[in-house]
Image (cartoon, rainbow, N blue to C red; front, side, top):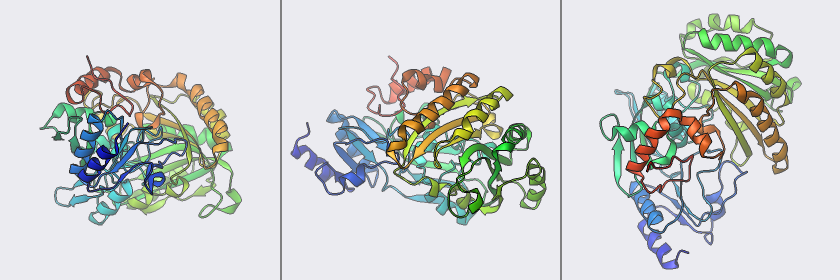
Length: 459
């Protein structure tokens, strides 16, 4: 139990607001992206600077509270909040500084990728990220970072130069190849296990306008398109990316009315090569099968990154399942063709992201992310605005995953799984888990930061 006096003393240490269940705005402050998760923290500290973060970590630790770290965005299993504990919320820490000469981007821990795109695009730069711009920079980066630019420039962590962090004992450190290199190794894929990352330093990439967007095909063409895409993405130059999926066509603009609510297969393409050559690159793609909807063309990178935002506003019900795949066999495709067309709601989807190309040029032990030999990251998300849909979206996701899991590489991207137990966490890191546990023992020996896909300190 927290005394009123201790809470008031904590409040006095902060520049940002502190919410208790009795405070106006508490319910708004505790709401998270995945509405399937409903927890009531004892305290929510919305930090505005590093001093606030230090004060919050020290208070939470000394008070014996479970501490959750919340960045700016999503977190499928709701690990950015905690029942009866302290949420350290970074959403007010929005500073970004672009150095156009060095092409570096310093990003505070509460930013979303929309914030980053807004800051970098005027300089003709992008930072490789995900596919939805409302995603938080912190969560996506610390788990690895898979998205449109992965084949060309690697994972988000492959473009990370340094981080500033507050550790469980309240110390502030910078982790980079030259400072605390063991910690820097661990945060590149090891999640929020090691401290509160207050800022990230990224290498910006010269990407401004791309030839990109989704092409939808009727389900009768799915077997042909799926196999063509698989073979193409494993062999084509790295400046061509694109993920395969099954979706229900949303019932509104810009989608043609005659296709509303039809289930289709889709490839969301992203070509970062010479725009003058784009039409020639896509001519064979467009000849594979007649497209029902073709939105592919020149587009600014920020528009590409935000294309799915309207489909996924905050407050939907989410259930995730995921796996890595080194290959997608014809037998696996047959399973996809059975389960993918059963997608239950317009927000639900299966996506298969390519993680080859530049991501393969980093060794499996060079960062905490272990599955460098995998070619694909699969996610199956049951999503709906209506809680009454939860049983069917969860069952579809589970059944689909169970059918494909025997073909998988055995682990999953930690940003795309629910709370599935310690065995699943260890499977995500394989032989890197022991090293991660040793780093955890060094920098967070008491497991202060355990509300996450937890790596337990080595004994």
